[in-house]
Image 1 (cartoon, rainbow, N blue to C red):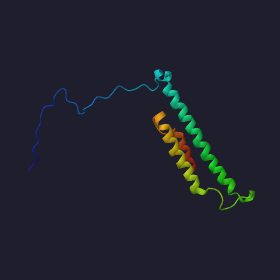
Image 2: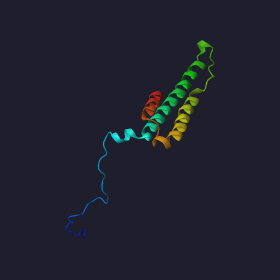
Image 3: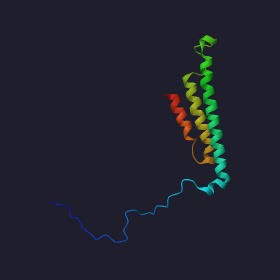
Image 4: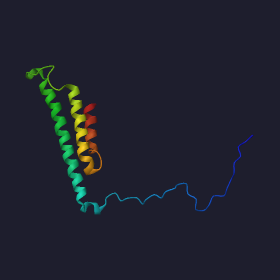
Length: 120
């Protein structure tokens, strides 16, 4: 017993896709450089990156200085590792919420790379 397979000549206009691919977009669109929305997104990403790095780096520096026993710090003082994690996560949450409507994406990818570098 075998499968019954019907063979039909393919139509000349048959395509496996039911859609048409748009033409590829150019890597650099000169027309976009004249739009205010491009510069608004650039400024938003810059400020978000600046705030992210400022707050998170200061949290880590503050934790180190508050727990340094040689300089009068307390071993149980500071925000702790969990506080540093909350600072990183909270800043990502706040900045994504604030800039998603402007730039249309999340914070610049180097932020995540810096965060991953600090974690390891």
